[in-house]
Amino acid sequence: MIVNLSRFIEQERRYWNDLEKLLDQFERAEVGTIDLEEIKQFHYLYLRAGNDLVKISSSTGNSEILDYLESLVSRAYGEIAELTRNRLRFKPLHFIMQAVPRAFRRRYQAFALAALFFVAGALLGAGLMLRDSNAKEVILPWFLQISPEQRVRIEESAGPGESRSSHLRFSSLLMTHNIRVSLATLCLGITFGLGTFLLLFYNGVILGAVAYDYLAAGQGVFLAGWLLPHGMVEIPAILLAGQAGFVLAGALVGWGNELGLKARFRKAGPDIVTLIGGLSIMLVWAGIVESFLSQYHEPNLPYSIKIAFGCVEGIILILFFSLCGRSANHHELT
Image 1 (tube, helix red, strand yellow):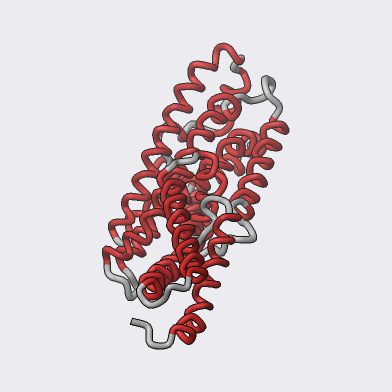
Image 2 (tube, rainbow, N blue to C red):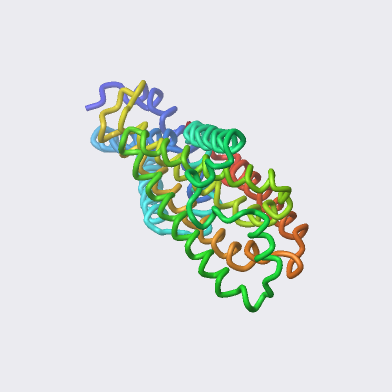
C-alpha cells in the first residue's frame, strides 16, 4: 500500500519518462540497431512500470494516472512482442549488410591477431624460398610445384574452350580446400587457439612461398592477375575464420573475464555464428570469381582488367567492413 501517493508518483515519474523515451527510440530505430544495454534498461523500466501500475491501482481511483500507466505498460508489452518477432525472423539482407560487419568490428582484435599470424607465416615462407630454392618441394603442395615459367606458358597458350574444364576442376579443388581450411581454422579455436594459429601460419607460409616463387621468376603480373580477383575475398574470408576461432578460444580461456564459461560462450556464440555466415558467403563469391575470371589469362583476358577487378573488390570489402551497419541509433559494444 502506498502511504504518500503524490510523493510516490513524483519519485517514479522519471522512470516512466525514461521508458517513454526508449519506446520512442525503439519505434524509430531500424531492426537490429538496438544494443544490449538499451534492451536491459528497457526490460528493467518495463518491469518497474508494471509494478507501479499494480501498486497504484490498489491505492487510488485517479483515472488519469491509471490510464497513463496502463497505456505505457501496454505499449511496452507490444514493443517486446515486436522485438521478439523481428529477432526470430531471418532477414538475409540485414544479416549481410548489418550483422556481419558489426560482428567483425566488435571482434576486430581477434581479426588483427589472425592477420598478424598469417602475415608472419607469409614472411617466413618467402624467407625460406629466398634462402633455399629447394624448399619449394617441402613447403608447397603438389599442384603448386610446377615452375612459374611453365605454368605461364601452359595457361597463356590454352584457348578458352580447351582450358575451361581443367579450370573448373582446379577451382573446385581450391574452393573445397579453402572451405575445409576455414572450418578447421574456426573449429580448432577449441584447442585454446593453438590449432587456429597453426593453420593460419601454415597457409601464410604457402602464400609467401608462392608469391616469392613467381616474383623471383619475373612473373609478378601473372601472379597478380591470377590471385587478386579471388584472393582479395578468399584470403580475408580465411582470416575471418581465424577471427572466429580466436573468439572461440577467448571464450574458452576467459582471461580478464569474470563471467562463467557458459555465459562467455553465450556471449560469443552469436558473433561466431555470424562470422561463419559471412565468410561462407565470401568463399562462395571467391569460388565463382575464380572459376569465371581468375583462371583465364592473356591473351584471352588482359591482366590489367583482372588486377583492376581485384583492387575494386578490395576497396569495396574495406568500405563494407568499416562503414556498413553503422547508424545514429546504434552503439556498438566491443
